[in-house]
Image 1 (cartoon, one colour):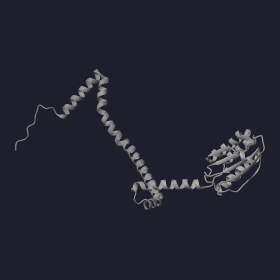
Image 2 (image 1 turned 180 degrees about the horizontal axis):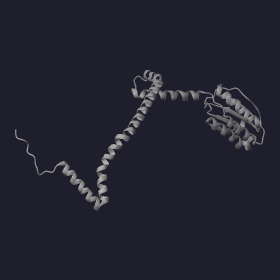
Image 3 (image 1 turned 180 degrees about the vertical axis):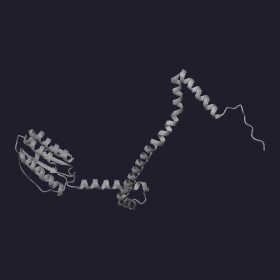
Image 4 (image 1 turned 90 degrees about the vertical axis):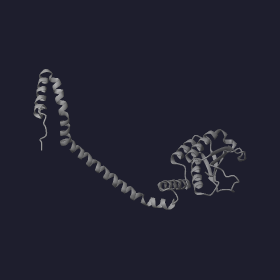
Length: 243
């Protein structure tokens, strides 16, 4: 079998390396900065490889371990929340079986919020201590003694609480009593109605301010009007109506 032909004119690898080295030495003598740039260009990949091999891997392993720990923490947190939500999810699935699965918890949350609001509205509410203190302070500025009657329109617990509190405020500037509910009116009173005798006309601004603060605290409607049927007296009638 004939031997493969070899191009005798092609220089060997060693010869090429020697030529490159000689060229680099000559370049170094003539232009050192350019030779240094060429050497840095060829050595840069080697430096990157050495860094990645000896130091980069350690950083990567540390980062990988950190990510794994974060994933493990997230999984534990997810499992804990899933356990906490399991009873609510069961109720939501039973209550809203026809709703899409992803909407059931949201519908249950809305139902609970609605029940909480209704329960809060149903609780009897009295005048806050700050509003009571302000009302008493204003009554001290009335300047004239008054007689009063405070009555609820309906015999419910909240009205009874308000009647007692309003009486305590009015006692600062006069005397009076509380009365039981009268006959049920054809049109229920909303909020609080204050009726004053003509003899109290000069004191009406202060009296109005007292009940404005009380009604704002209770978020109730206020009606203040004169009542000629009370005669030329200093009498004030207060009726606690519905919310």
